[in-house]
Length: 85
Figure 1 (tube, rainbow, N blue to C red):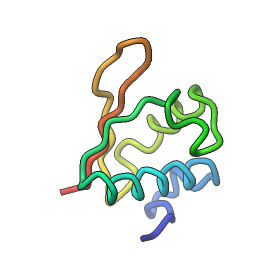
Figure 2: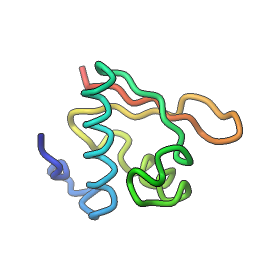
Figure 3: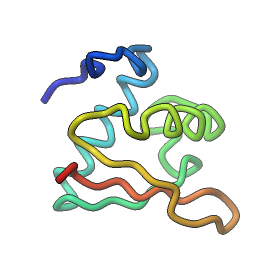
Figure 4: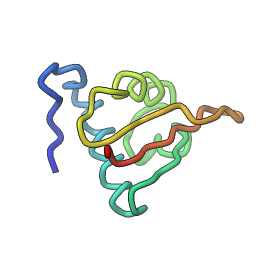
């Protein structure tokens, strides 16, 4: 699986690549659908919850193989991540 940015290069930072790779790996483990909160995955990706939120916004629509959307807010934003159909 590639960790490269799309041709637009909008998420080419190492932090964004690390987060995208983590999300892809978790999608594989979770059978294609994942719900995450930044505060719960922060240690796994070595980023702060605030950094994760900002990167999730940047990754929305720029990663070819996964879809990211804000799903809900209960004490922190929940993100729904699915394989791109």
